[in-house]
Image (cartoon, rainbow, N blue to C red; front, side, top):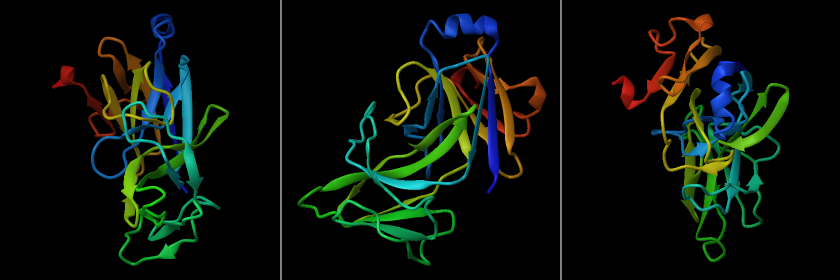
Length: 231
């Protein structure tokens, strides 16, 4: 399994303003089409922070409401993990996931679950993917990266991407649902042979850009800057 590494650097002079403002390094990952809707990692910033992970995923179920700022408390999770693709996990009335059921109609790289919780108990539940990461030497274990409401009897299919959205913010913690990313963000595009990216904070633009060690990333499409200031 490929291991990815993201290093985020901040000049110590800029830290003098970022820390007192309560700003945190924030990472999110897209699942399916559209932007991410869950804060994967919210990290206390230092001059240099390294995050590593592999593309292993778990499927969880929760009673959390899909609303901006809602915290995700996992009701149940696929075990043993990580989850397997190309099939679905039945979520049973006992509030546990059953074994994987292979399904040729579910593509490779897509993870799925069927919600068999009775409508009379829960008309809908929230399902999503979770993923672990190492922040320096500290494990952030199985933090949610997506959330979607699934009605009783229905199936959810989730296709994660290796892209990572990065920005600074002070409002949301990890495992929090967001309706949109507020402020400027950058997208570090892993995959296709790209396994390590180094970025630095640019205070003039308020976002992370390629570091000198990774010159040329933007031109090669490895880092995307998402801000109206750069249109």
